[in-house]
Length: 288
Image (cartoon, rainbow, N blue to C red; front, side, top):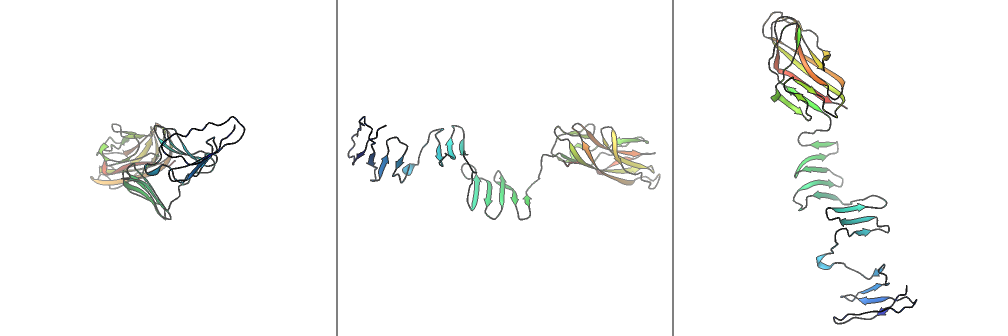
């Protein structure tokens, strides 16, 4: 395709019209901008030189889906797709944000989300309140830290009693649950069920206090479903003496499946006894 070359200075507000002859000779158009800087194009629009600034005081506007692209292979793109603002690393290498201090904030810069300091801490915020900060030795957390693993803890029970020669569930008070990041507590039957998606190895610990006791033998057990997995030894203290107490403490590590039930019990060999509420608790922690 032939090109045309025009040189000169336009004046006034008239329109300059150029008609290229049908020849094979290249043509170049060279015109000054408002400040006198020469703008040169080869006629195809692929090459435009002589630009020292863009947009002026009001900036540069791009419509939706119109991309500002950088790199020989258009490796970096910035655009708006009518719903979201996008910075895209579309080529080789990685997207690097280089600064001595990084701030990620909300739209009007009134709230911090993340602050990263060169050679220092990374601060993470929730609703402008710092919750986590990295340190030279690890992390500091403000508030309760939870993860995807299940854990459950309940303390304090009603002083329920039962007949001799049998095990009886410890009836923990529903209001005494102190940790529970997964559902699963049966408040009527006093057992905890492994939630969906939480199968794994668990540490199970139970303290079962025995009070108001008129028997010389008692013990406790941790049950999974209908079978006991660990039990304490019989105590043998002050037979037939009322109101002495004994604490049974048990810990076990077990592989649990979804739907398994975990509960604690106490046993009395003869006479009467009841669980001692202020010393009884059940804690279940998922390890894997």
